[in-house]
Length: 326
Image (cartoon, rainbow, N blue to C red):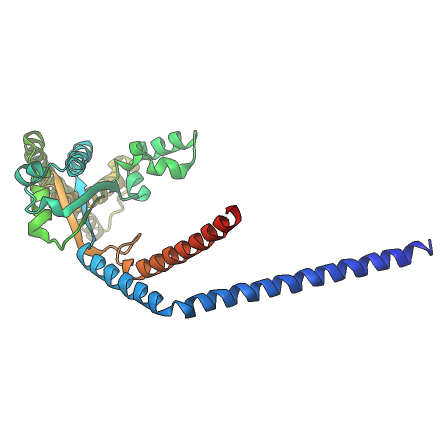
């Protein structure tokens, strides 16, 4: 055993020496590489500055000439028009891709159709609003969630298309405003004869429902006032009167509370029932800084320098290989 220990110690010393030597060699190679890089740029500093200036100038020009803006319109489709809305937006996108500016200008009414590069529509996820006071919607989500992830269910087309609010997003290469795009688009989306007829009937029906509920609430108030007066008269006569559950007074009060709540919702709903596709809000001309938009003045100088380095290395490699093969 005593003869093996010194041997192991010697092996360890050799391993440490080799590791130290490898680290030293790596540091030396790194220093040489850094020196060569610095030497390369010092020797070619004039050409490097020219490439940086050329790339920055060209990038600045391209950033200024190729602008991109994001625009959003939040809408709510009424009277079961959600599928109609999505099909219309898909049609406009298809016309944009095919370059059919005649359709976009004459049918949709966009003044500068060549400025629109893309349009799409997505629902605004609002699961709480979707199931609010709608037990059948809650049961639908529970049923669909049994076979999959609840998050996927909430963004599934079957569920998401039934959300109240939807966002129409479009990309333009110039500044736009309500008159140039939003108003013509909404006018086009609300041009369906069928849904216009449904909208008129739906609006009138809601007005009648509000009026009818007001009448019922007034009648309930009359009943409650009569009951109050009866109690006051009984108190004056110092007589005990017993009321049992058959008077259904509690049910009457609950019915009034329900109707008052519904009236509030109906009056809010009436505000959006003047159109099939109702605009809620619009946000226009958000400068697009995603991808390469607005960054070419920084990217092109780096790209030009990398190309110059690649050409330089390629020439050196080609020259060495040529000398070997001669």
